[in-house]
Length: 472
Image 1: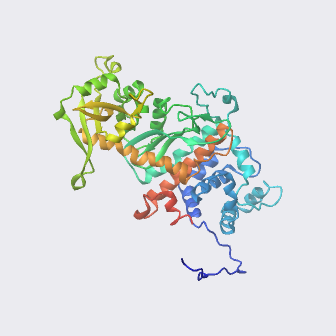
Image 2 (image 1 turned 30 degrees about the vertical axis):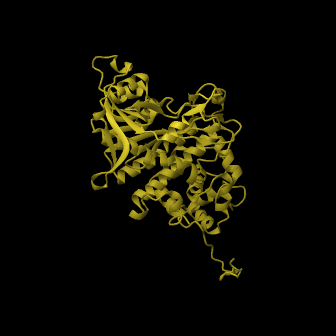
Image 3 (image 1 turned 135 degrees about the vertical axis):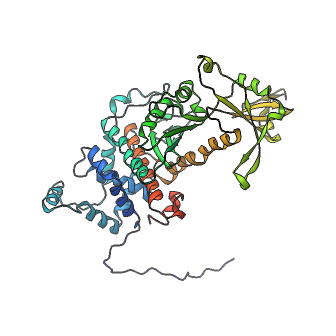
């Protein structure tokens, strides 16, 4: 056992009057927010009624709270206690003002302004202004409902376009691959509703632009709202957010997006700006599809490879194209073609045993597994499917569709783990929706910093790791 010895360091008090900060990187984000037009958009669009504090001061304080690693409103006091950071912000507030403008600014306060960051009470009052109380009565445990945002919330939602446009101007892309997915964020708020996993949660729905790494749209929702609820509307709103210069849009989604209206909208070119939207969506397995898979000759199955060129790795999964046409796809003679790709993976013995349980008679009975299965060549397989209107070879299409899981789903972890999307400040739905949307602004501001400012080694580093290099 190691004996105790005093470690070779000691704390010394100092009378040094210099105000140091532990968050030296945050002013860089303030500078970027000013440069990209985020500040001017907040000033122009938001006009709240919190005495003394401006919308710009409160929203930017919450963005910095996210970037610094805070979890909740109370963590704003950690930023306020940092004398160096507070001194910088107090100087920024009056920077560039003429004498008369500075005097008018100081009159906003009953006493001389001492705090650089708004108090927790001010933030709570501010967030409550985004709550639409008349919509509250329509929220129901049994019925999926999305409360309409009030006017102030609508303006907050529109601010995100400033970051998207600035990123496109300085890092242009002609293609926008949109990955749509919902995420569950656990909560214990009394007014929250239960999700399909039987716990209280909110279930925001994200639309992620893969080429830019930005969230072009995020709608805050109750936990009982199905992931695919009104997904076509969300796609239309996301397409409207795409800036000038984008010429082609693609869509990737999980099985929540397997909806006739959504697929036909994309395949039939109903969008006025982009026309036909090529897509790959995880399809739900029907009995008709299973019968079509069983009719495929065993020599038609091909292995799935990951990677490209010399980096290709053969997996234990296989794919084949299936001759299958659902009923909804044959309503019109001129309907577009939809390709169905079947994917199989042999189940190991343990998985097969997990699917069985013994009844009182000791006879095994089938339990429901979280995926579809099929019997092929005397073996049990997990069965998955993708529907698409793209003409890519099957293996390439599968890897393209699966890239959605590699990026957009990682965003969920960042939102709830690295930023403040995992903890909510209020029992009011609208206040939590505003909290979520400010978090989205923080996410995109950080992404713009990575794309346009940071060196190559930090461009894809996760935010919680980036803090070691930038924000602290």
